[in-house]
Image 1 (tube, rainbow, N blue to C red):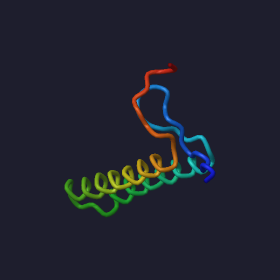
Image 2: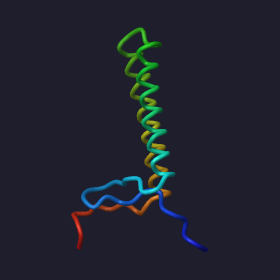
Image 3: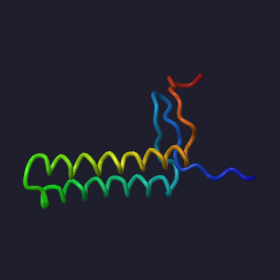
Length: 85
């Protein structure tokens, strides 16, 4: 089976990914847009501090989990890296 094209490449230092294809950049743009919309809407629909925290923190965590799943499935396998070997 032919290996699919990677959307994300593993970082050279630390743990994580960065986008290397238009699909990866699209996923990152959707993530940033979703976070921005959630923060904007939290101000509109919140009546108290707890409402604000729930309307910002919970969607942020869920969106971040989705982003990490996509990066893990469509990117290089992550591991701690400290530069070139």
